[in-house]
Length: 442
Image 1 (cartoon, rainbow, N blue to C red):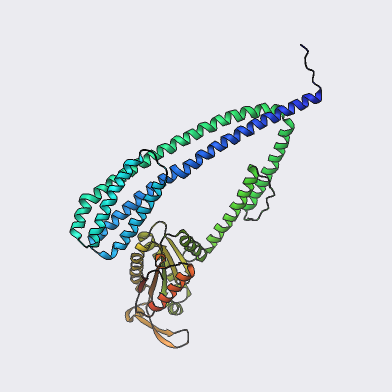
Image 2: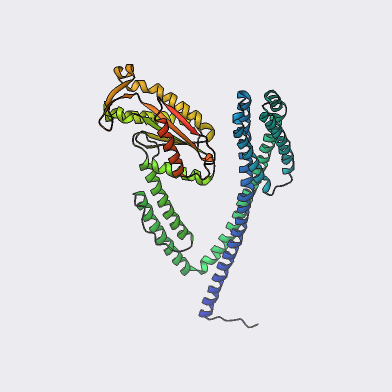
């Protein structure tokens, strides 16, 4: 048999074709593996993780509903029933979302348990609506609470199964990644021997990209957030360059928020408050906007001096933060608008207690801010902004509360207008006062 003799050019061409073949094989395998992993990831996020999150949120809502129900039974106050209805709507919404996700055969017992609980919950609500308090309390103890406990246990077991499924999926991911790594590495080693020139080009490109990203890192670390990145490729370095640019912009925002904080109170300032307010409005979840304003502060500042006024601003900021932390939620925002104005963003159900506790703490603090003479007579004489001498009472506080769910189209401007109107009314009243706007869907 005659041997096929290849020229140097043919050998080079053959070697090039081998390199191309190995590279294509590696690319095709990597794309197929990536496609498979993306499919698993989407399944994990869209089904398993969402199911786990909804079941966890449902458990929390059930516990919140239980606490509110017990408060109503203790207080026997029908005024609180709309709050219970809101909790029920929240539970129903989360359950509908959970049911809408494709589930396995283990979901059937949970559905049955929820149906039993839901029936008992609605029966209890009817008793509360009729103000049959004793029957409602017996129903809660004997029927509703046991069914709720069974439902919570079912949800806990359901979440554990979801966690097991997610763990198993992640283990499969790891196995696929290891197998893909081995095969890709094998193809890469074979291709390296035939692709010296390509390797040199890649090394030079990586060296250039790392050098540029290193310089960008140093520039960003020194505070230059506009460092130009010229990597326009769509590979990993191109993505990393774009991520660097995004990171620089986020660092700029964080720096602005830090600078926005009040130097006296260290509380978030107007930029943070505005951003949080707009975010909550866009999110659609009900919230309470609690605006705190000091009365007669200018007169106090004129009498006792700038430093005393600054001390009052700082003390009130610490007090508002302490009360908001103790009686609000971890997600609440406590900010300093400027001067003697403060803002708390909390949930509607906690707003009234927060306002009452803030006024209580403030009124207890006020006498210590005055000298003995002013404290004894309860006022001092001074000139108002028009140069007219008048008597100024001791410092007091006005708190205006606007709940977003009472507005048909909530916006930062609408909330600000309502607060301004309420403050104007409150400042005409003696002493410290708070007012909640309970008008619905204005």
